[in-house]
Image (cartoon, rainbow, N blue to C red; front, side, top):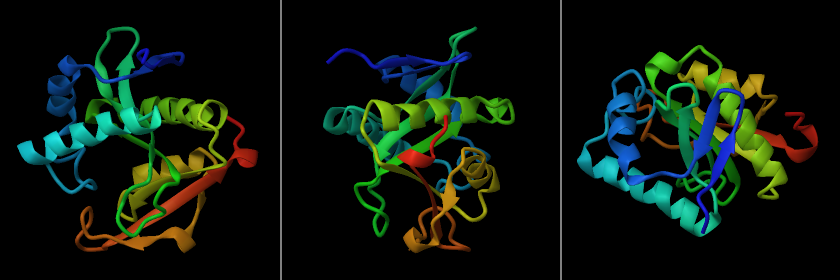
Length: 182
């Protein structure tokens, strides 16, 4: 299978390479970035995440791809698509997701990568609807979901204490193909 690569104005979304994991984890496995993602990951959790990300490509042809900044080749994090697999959640639905290192926050990178991912979801991968998941405390994430035109789907919310023990609910936003205006 040919390596996936998609470019935006400032970013490259692409498949993972073995040499990406070290810089990715060094930049994103921090208390601030992992605050709403279950906390800093140990070796076992990191390996499990890597295995899952690679399996999504193998099983579905898409994943949460590496986000690389064009002008200097720095890995900013990931963004992309997977099939929702959170226990209790909307299993099997196309899901958009992102995780960027802290020094990349507030610069529009997440929105640029998420818009590209949503374009791909609808145009290349045939999704009719795409969901995004977060926790209530992660205002930055659900704020971006709203800015992307996604709407709150309380009917799809589900209990899960993996990410926020104080408020153990995953909240869901979604957007349908007909509502996406990229």
